[in-house]
Length: 401
Image (cartoon, rainbow, N blue to C red; front, top):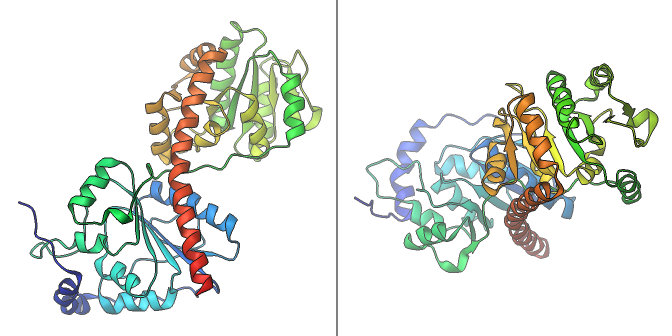
């Protein structure tokens, strides 16, 4: 049976005595930086990464901003725990941080905290709202307070029509709903010098090229054996080998040299010639160039357990189809979206990696996957663009006030 809704005023009156008795004193907080402060809340590590990329866009536009994160810890230097959801603790939190605006991701709501922020004229945006139940810390014997909390948001960015419909049924005004796609990492394309790209594209014209990006030492032997097998079917095949850690570069270069392939050291020798079979680099600094040149990329840190993989969207954003190993827990959402779109393929060993390279190095196959990957990147960018645009508008209004 559906719970009845409850007003926020009634909720706060009912929970005030119980919360005040059980609350422990809050630990000391870091000093608040001067200037405007964006408060970003995320429930999960994946949401934290997505919100981190969103806030990075804001910082590019407004260098004077500071970012406070709560919930799952992201990359921001300034982090705090959410206070207990009682009026006294909420007031202390909001008085200390005095956020200029709040970006909230997740289906768990804090009635006292969000209501208090709204009362302080802090604009509230709910980002990536999905068609899932909403939760609050209200005791079970109380009616549902979530509908009242959701109506305190100034803007709600939804994943899809189903999420919009759920929120509308809960009484949320359609005027504050914006259908913007899923919340995901919006990777900024890695840069590279235009002239260098043109020179390398001309030098490699007509050659099949694949990239092993952010490779760990434990993976390189498997990659080299896969390259040997694939090269039997494509005699002019070139592998670009990019270590994740420059400290591993010498070991990886020695392993490549020991195979008998014709090696070119990018940092020592410069451009490869027609006979080069493997191009080795010292690190990932020029990945923006290599992703642009390679229609097919294997993303390292994924063949061995415990490494967590690397962000595949940096390859998709630059038109490269993606191969990856089974251990990508650190970026599972991004890989799942690429798989569903047909933009990525999993490999498990040298045989499956070699087979995938041989099949997908064909220009039409790689191009189809790359196009699908670009669609995924664009979808994630749409949500980011809309949220950033709204946040900048609020910041401009706050500055003019």
